[in-house]
Image 1 (tube, rainbow, N blue to C red):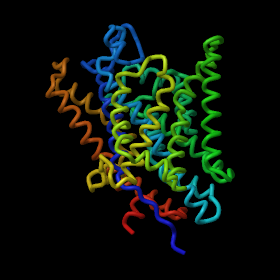
Image 2 (tube, rainbow, N blue to C red; image 1 turned 90 degrees about the horizontal axis):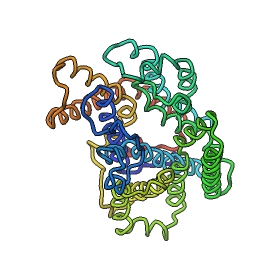
Image 3 (cartoon, helix red, strand yellow; image 1 turned 90 degrees about the vertical axis):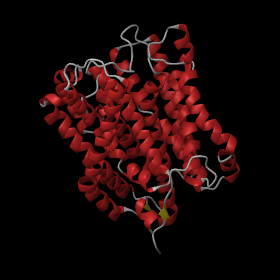
Image 4 (cartoon, helix red, strand yellow; image 1 turned 135 degrees about the vertical axis):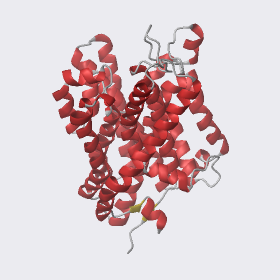
Length: 408
């Protein structure tokens, strides 16, 4: 019997836009570190919420709420998408093969994630800190101060723990904290789906337990706040595995053909609500629910994912060769973009040291150069480095997915 094939059209386009959202936020962040005018945050007072009523009352310091939100939302989207795809493929494998090979699952993830992750790990710890064009004010000094703690955290793919402990990202590779979250999810999820007879029960129970634990830590910290509990709180805040279980719920709905629910999700009102709701929440979310708003975003993102990939009447269609290519290299875009942005800003300062304020055209040129160079580096990495390992992972696949399923 031939291996089952799974392909969801349009998801590569969504991957690219999620990665590009992170690029936009980090361009502004690195402009701040380099001393250029930026859309990041004013020095005083430091406020982390960004609902519209705070802007109107003058309490908010974000110069551009959309810029502040794009990066975090891109990461949340990746979490939802990961939970959706991984769960769907696991459900297919369990039914077609009769069981889930956890070993093969781990090997597939290793061949796809680890080569690029550890390449950036080596560069970030041992190469880039010694090159002036990759110096990041504050972060480079923090790395020297907490080198070994960060080193072990990143080595064992717990960069989010290092981030929580030292309150600073490792320069040029700090974005890999989210890769750690995904790998931690991948470590436990195939076991859960394999041994729970009813996947929906697993999804619900894991989500509920996660939310109870997080709520308990937040409430405990309000009354008892030692440093170790603050570290736990920050670690759990970054580890939004519940966004992945939201994606898993979408996979369950789709795989088991819950058409009465899918009909509602694919309806035009639901589509309009999802897109308009995402935009509205960026500006209108009350500050007191900021800690849980990612759950609402997760549901809205899931509606988008299901419609783009399975609804012929989707208002957004992203299946074309350009987005297909950009989506295939989106992992590289996410991993390389900070290195590229830092390099470009240093190069700009070296070429034009007299310019202290970036005008509209200079800012636009910066975005274009950073984006195109990131895409080129990511394409080269995918073609000549990552693809060698991707081919190896197929030896351990019982379900043909992605490009191979499309080409069949």
